[in-house]
Length: 562
Image 1 (cartoon, one colour):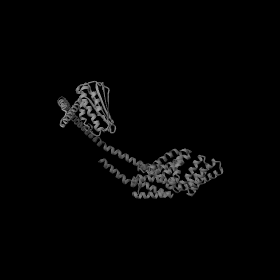
Image 2: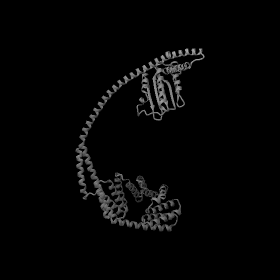
Image 3: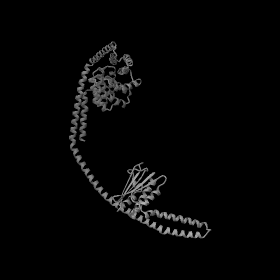
Image 4: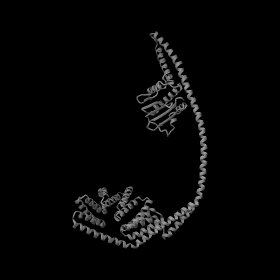
């Protein structure tokens, strides 16, 4: 809170001091925008003196209001004025200043213009073409970002011109091709003459003299028509080079002379403009130094403020840190103790649950065996005996009531059902021939036209295990195959058995729809708890891997001496 009050105090001091420096009333944003529009209007009228005065005033108040967007526009307008009077070094300085604040205010449109104008200075004033082209490329990026097709056109025109100036015509030609294609849509009066000149330069390079001559003459006509003296001087110069190359020295000299005369006229006009604003120029240079000084002082104040804040908050930070560390340590100690207690309770519950499940499994298997034996030895035997007696009776009588015949059919059907139930409880193949035969039969029994179970076994088929081991594994695998039939929507499944390191390893795969094991309790969802408990009862391991639309893999490993 103390640091916050200090910040407010410092802020208020700065707030009242800065207007005192400027010695002018604060402008509203609306007034500043009006001043900006007036400065740009005078710039376009080539009233550089008035525009520079307004731009300086705009910059002063924009800095006081800390409006990055208006600061960027102010610098840009000052730079454009110097550009207009052929002062490239000063123009470059203020363009770069403007670019800093345009990036801060995220003014993409202004960044687009700035990169293009800086590229112009590097290419056509400083003759640093590589650096200038790199700025043009950045301008293209921002032109596309703000969807300014006209600026894309102008920048590509500048890139083509830059490449042609240094004789790299193949690199510049794609840009010229774009200009020619979209000239009717985005070209303006001020670009017509330059476009013709660039075509003339390219046709000169390609030795297509008729087209080159036509393009240069057309460019001269357009430059005169639209009063583009600077462009006209460039065209005279390039046309003179073309004529000289083709041995037409008289016409070449005539155009070179026209270039020199026009260039001298332009230079005289520039000197007149510079002389007119000489006083303003000195003021701008002084203001430039004043701005730099303000920036240095602002940084010093900011550094002092941060230093004071850091010193006053240091002790508070240390105390708070120690307090927080103590709280964190206490919290972790409490959570660790709580977690250990919770884990102990969970382990006890798991052991109790496992014992209950094991007892339930043992009870189920015992009951299944008892019921199967009772059905086989008692019910099935009685039904067989009754059937035999009925068969003897039927053989001794030719004419019998329909009820007797129906009774015989019902008796046979009941006998078959009892036998099947007995076999389901304890399969005959399992009891007589063992687990490996029984699983082979189970796969064949479950296979149909829509789902095929493939059985692969590397263990000798006649090998036997303990009755308890075989019975439990048989019913575990049977339940898993039932799950595939009911839930997987698979067309193919495979069960494989191998022995390795005194363990039986069973893998069951299918190409079904699969499921996400991370999104829900899949063990509960598919009733696999009982199966997992049975495998745990055999001291085995159980793992399920599945993904949506990628099928399922179940892996079981059970010790043979368990």
